[in-house]
Image 1 (cartoon, rainbow, N blue to C red):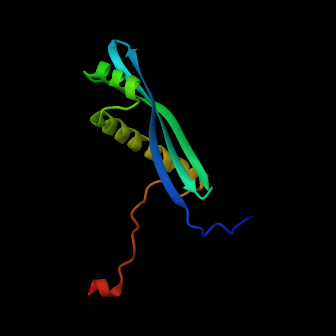
Image 2: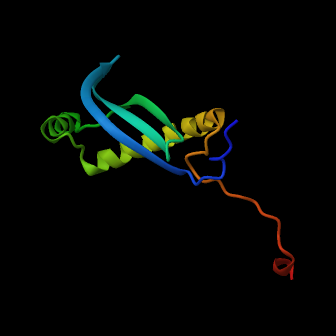
Image 3: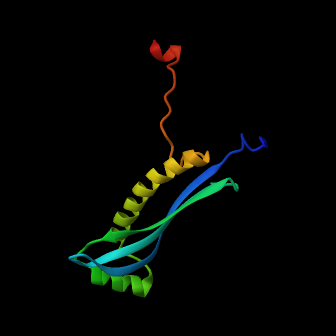
Length: 123
């Protein structure tokens, strides 16, 4: 086994990216926005990568305006982008934490660490 990199510093970076937006009807719901995304967790230098892809179904009264803006500028209004990206972060980070354990990579978020109290803190 190669153990020289065990103590190396690994940098972890998580990035969501919106790839596409299209209109979709879902059952009786009309004008739903299907927002395709990718979520990548990179472990550098060259330690690994977790990549998740999917789509968020987004219902709003402004779907036509949002879709037009996407087609024209490849961007979403800031309030929509914040809401969608926060949802992507929440859902994907939960999955990425599980996958990172399976792959023996550090989790993509920092967990709190419980430490034993020192004697000076007790006094």
